[in-house]
Length: 404
Image 1 (tube, rainbow, N blue to C red):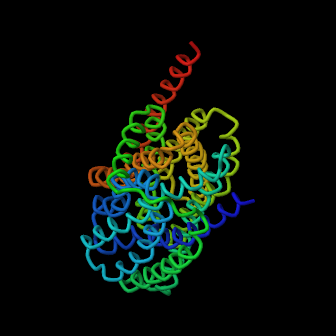
Image 2: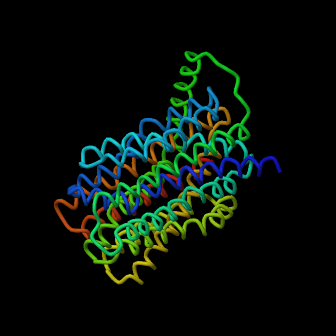
């Protein structure tokens, strides 16, 4: 019962903080960037900027929480969630939006791996089930964020063309939600984890470095993390350019654009518990390969039709792929990580995963300056399928070596 109470406590904080963060993203952010006359490559950089911070901060944050305590790190991340949405209100130029996104990304970079480490500690041997349930919060707020963000813009515009005040008012609402999340964190997080024993900072950072070094030499963790990274590449690209494709190219409303993203995330929410259950009972790498193939196919399919109902079906397939991959990858890393380096391992996992999510919109943005949507998405899909074959070959070879 204590395990479930702890999971509920941290899930409550996670939901409220991530809801604010995800409303600020899709479709709100790429449409705001487009309103400010950002080029495709600039839009890719803006959407990817928040994730770039994760490349540098997630691994140290996760490892540092092993030494200094999870609670302190979680509260710091929640504070950034509370403050940063208000900064969008002063954004009137592309360069300002880029800077804001870099800083805002610190919230999930610090918070994400530490929260996963707490849940993995709570879960014991049922990491697949607990981590997949916890992942529902992240994906669920992604789904709600897209729906609420699209509705907010539609409501604020009231049938007229969008102006900069509409975006600023939407981000003001995100800020209010962020403050509410921090207040909840102050009262709930002390119940999640007892205070950790104080350690000398110098000694802590030495252990952080040792943990990251050992984790970074683990081929299983690195390969599995790369699969999450590549899957995240498509998610980051879709987050940035699916709303623009739907609104600007297919001429659907911002509400429909938000709905499609919510459908992607909603499908993942509904199926993650099932995928977590299967992940605990099957070879995780096989599920990862299945999800990656589906991801590659559905990603390019977004560019093949403007029919809204077909786009809905593609969104469901894309969400299914996300559910299959993410439940298996994080559980596999948590399973093979050493207990005293769980935070470091999940931090390294988060760093590699965020590299893909950051590069996805940037790569697609660059490609779109030179070619169309179909060619750009097809190149990424081809790379996904090729890398999945490589991953499968490595896993089969490792299994054969183990049996000898």
